Image (tube, rainbow, N blue to C red; front, side, top):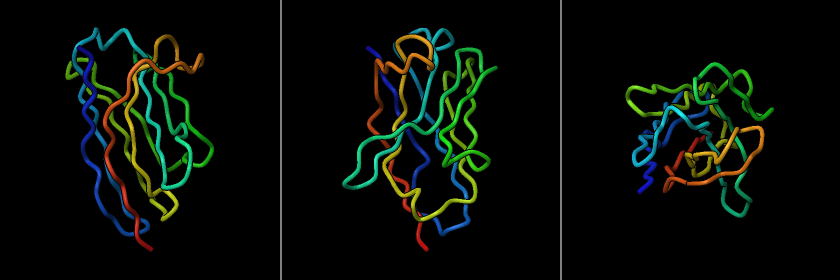
Length: 121
């Protein structure tokens, strides 16, 4: 079955960096667009970044543009989220997602279990 396993979360000071990874299995990884979402306490889950099946196209939420970079390795079946210049408001559980179709359509088929990112001021 489909599995998305996130790792790389943790606690960091404001201005620091973290790199999240999402290891995928159970489906033909290189055929699917992938994304990252996050959910802060008391808030709804929100979109962070997406990447198309080949890695040639990416899309970001305005609040992470210039700070976060999404990438993928189709051989290793892994999608990454490099997070730089982290702010306390980036504190959230970060989720990896597999899209049903293109990320522009926005329909998520599967979610990972999430990894906690905490940014202290």
